[in-house]
Length: 146
Image (cartoon, rainbow, N blue to C red):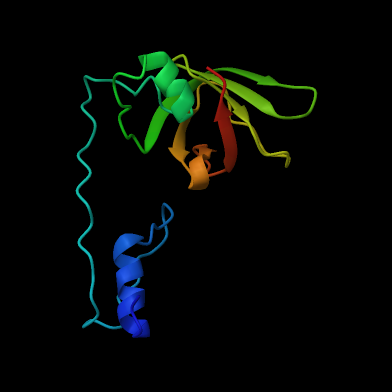
């Protein structure tokens, strides 16, 4: 355990770097002499590989699909077009994407659903959740059905 607050905070920041929302301006560091961490290099996924077919499934679902042999790729987000859109009796929407993935709105709050043929992004959220973001920057929590 580190007794010095500044060193402890620098250590925490190194382990858990701040992630900025899309479009959020980056502020200059308050203390230029403070310990900083270089951003981790995340190689862009190969355009020929296509999206990870396991993206959005729980670890148990991924192990069952892969026969517990191959670890899943660690993609942070996928982008695809909406090919079908349905709204359930509970008001939550279900979207089918052009990559054959099916996502259901998990939030119970009313949300504007994406539009047909709109490009959406599904990204990893906190604590194993996933967020669907429309072109208008409307985000809602979703879960993958298939």
